[in-house]
Length: 260
Image: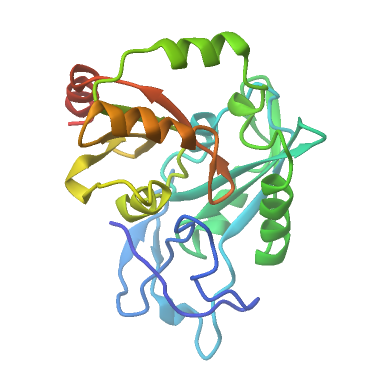
């Protein structure tokens, strides 16, 4: 069950400042009981747990991440929790081993902290409470870092990779990689502003667990438009560098089938 909070947080955020819809937290109009991930006890997810005060911003800071860590590793590490956004921290273009994870709603922070010092691969990961200001500062640093992004996208663009993309045949379909997990079709429409697209021409793909994969396919009106849209390759959506690849309807159909 996905729930959304659209009020204000204790540290001043109002849910509208994040790029690419980075927030998904508890809807004040709903309350329910659920089972804590990895345990058998019941917990109250009602927004009324924060009586007469706004809930804290649901973000944790991670330290000690493997240097080959990918977003999917963090999602697996927090298996059972709702992941809204994952931000890896870089310094001078190099991954520092630190990151931030925005969760679905404030009470999930406590469950995330229970994973403190658990292993990801051969390294144990430390988890700390964080806040909106610390997270936003990290987002701003990544946006202005010329080689920012997640570890898998931190390498500079190679000449060979550019040549392959330039020489690829265009069929009117592009594949997008590196999307924020909370990105929706309207975010992609805005990313390709100026092109004649509709929501039906955008296909967000899911992983084997039914969660967003960070990839999407976009069907353009014709081959010329998809080739022109490649000018958006490596531009940012929120704080993320989005990679674009010429694709095909066959690859699109296969990706959709895998997500069913």
